[in-house]
Image 1 (cartoon, rainbow, N blue to C red):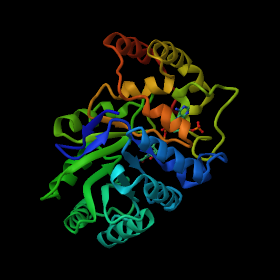
Image 2 (cartoon, rainbow, N blue to C red):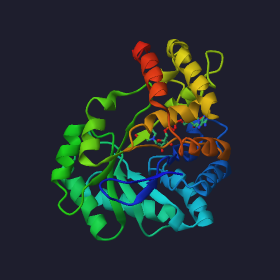
Image 3 (cartoon, helix red, strand yellow):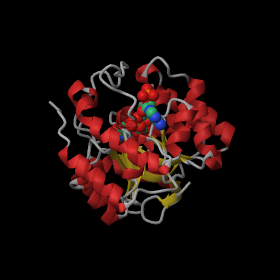
Length: 312
Ligand SMILES: NC(=O)c1ccc[n+]([C@@H]2O[C@H](COP(=O)([O-])OP(=O)(O)OC[C@H]3O[C@@H](n4cnc5c(N)ncnc54)[C@H](OP(=O)(O)O)[C@@H]3O)[C@@H](O)[C@H]2O)c1
């Protein structure tokens, strides 16, 4: 496994993380089982993955509970625990309470990375209040690093002005070969400012693995209405999936591993693929330790430039 420093000179985290939304329950399909998700995490850690991402929102804390069982198995020190406070909990008292509840569910004394899940467009809690509350948790030794998620550059800039003793270590955003909006502003800003990007949906919720086609689309709650899986988009993506397969073969890798390696072409981007079982976690961990050549990256870029997806 390769490792990078989180944020500016922060702790070492694996170049491929593991997403645990899947462990939240059946939202990702009826084939989700607690024991399989726990084993996925245990296998990932065995392969050197330490960055594991969850949230109070995933199954109303169930994912954190599943994770706590795996932490007991692999040992606290083997895991860099990233969890999130929901966007409905951004008042100072709520942040404090949410953090205490996450610590309890996770069965640990300290969270390694505590992230704001999304900026709050509804209750309009001032960012200043939330960031000050996070810094108080940092001071109290409850959290080691402060992160955010789904923040635009304007949110990042403002949030950072409210932190006096710490800085934002990471921004977790949607980023994969098919959904690249963050490349316009967020990725360059974060690179410049030493903020690590944690890429969510890095294999396009499974689409880039090449196992879905118009005769086989996911039917679960998370993905049945997902634009990525519109018949037209699945069709449009097939030349890309073919290229991922061909390029992968040359490296002894799968399409999902190539899609993850493509994100890793930027060293400050850490994909956090979700896994439902150990075999998926193992495959995804295999996206580290090698890289795509400049020629392969150019070839993929040419295909991506021609790709037209339907988001309406
Ligand atoms: N901050 C946020 O707002 C936010 C939003 C979304 C996600 N996240 C985080 O990011 C993580 C990852 O994103 P995601 O789960 O949306 O998308 P993803 O990682 O792109 O896709 C995960 C799904 O792809 C399939 N899969 C995984 N590995 C595979 C492999 N090697 N081969 C074939 N299929 C594979 C699995 O489903 P099937 O086997 O059923 O196809 C799995 O549930 C989440 O777990 C969560 O921690 C954060």
